[in-house]
Image (tube, rainbow, N blue to C red; front, side, top):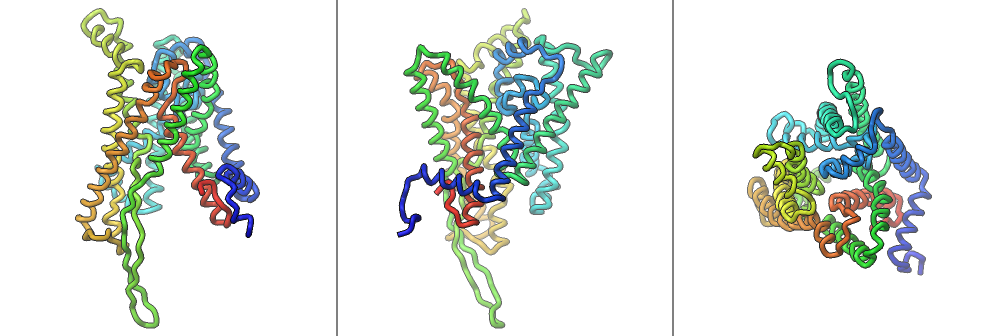
Length: 442
């Protein structure tokens, strides 16, 4: 009997897999390179723009939910108004725009069909679109900070011109610098670099989250139950992220052997994920729900009917309101269907199967296959949409059950962390399996 025949348990296997990963020089170099880039990102996130009133900035973030949500993607850099205050959010916005425009613009459709070269072209377009988005979002942030007394002299005239231009270029350059760091991780490190940048920012906020929990010592039982709910949410996210429907696919191909042509066939399956939309529907839903209340705060002091309407939205669309979370649930379900169907149709699975000599068992190639796959994706997306909607409102339900208000549990943060963590572990697993080592996920 060899040592490999002994089942030592999952946790020792994880430790052994980590040891194996660090024992391989090339894999160790990739891991250390990734950690070094992430450390550099956290260092840059603490370099603030000049002229910021930090006390006024802290007050603004306590009263503005939209800024708090955007701060999620910057890893706290926005709440410090550092040179990377926008994080990679402009790049994410640009990527979403390109994905949504691809079915509409024929030239983008052609690029999507060109394989690796087409993806490289679309990536360059995404980079170019990121720059004006970063400038626009940066200027919007500066104007908002000026209105709340955090920064002064924002504009393009007189003495305000040079400080404003310098701040905008610093913010845009900071965003592109993070995008470059993320692509360096993707190319030379382990995992998806952009996702890991967001992941590192979320993890950096954990100490503050734990500090808030310790401040609520009068409700120790509630905090414990709150932690249990968090673990259950993470387990549910892992289960649904890994769940998929297998569509049996048959491939037939002809080969020449000995001067004669033979027909070969091979069976495989097409995996359709239940949650193929990821975190995108949550980002859309929270952004739309938060936006009216944020805009309403600027008109709340108006003495006319505009002020009354603004006060209504400011009082109703807040995270403590049940209507707020009902709207979040509905919008998450809607956006999950919308985004999944848009991305799924871009993949053109039926056409690619037919080109490669593949077909779904019992379904004719071409349009019948496309119609069948559309019916399947709609059915399984219903489960994924309800799951994402439930995950989105779980923080509110957890706060009602446990009466813990000091800790803000972000479902979007958990979804990002679990997804990025699983993706990175899969890449490490693949690297280890290529070298005949046992991986993390077995």
